[in-house]
Image (cartoon, rainbow, N blue to C red; front, side, top):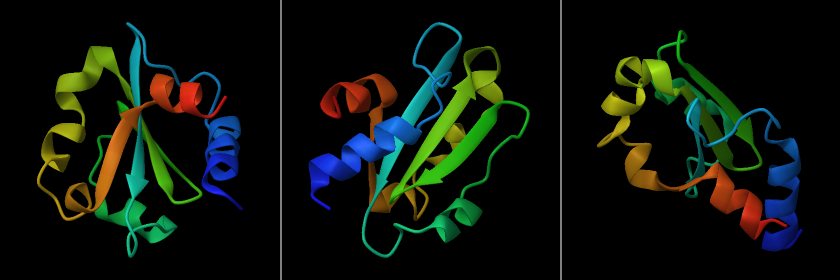
Length: 99
């Protein structure tokens, strides 16, 4: 599958209600080789009260309720091994690129 087709597939599988707006923040983490598997989820510490993660085709989609953003695992994510082996874009950008 070409990269654009993969991006389109990812866009279709991101939960429709996961947005980047005033209520929530959603980022797509494009994982580098060696981290582009579901096992990478286990390396990310989250707060289940505010964070939701989903693995899709070599990416992790991270959704956070903005009201609880200060309690999110995102704050401890920066500098981790996974963080050093990925690049992130917000879901609005990814959906735009995949359409």
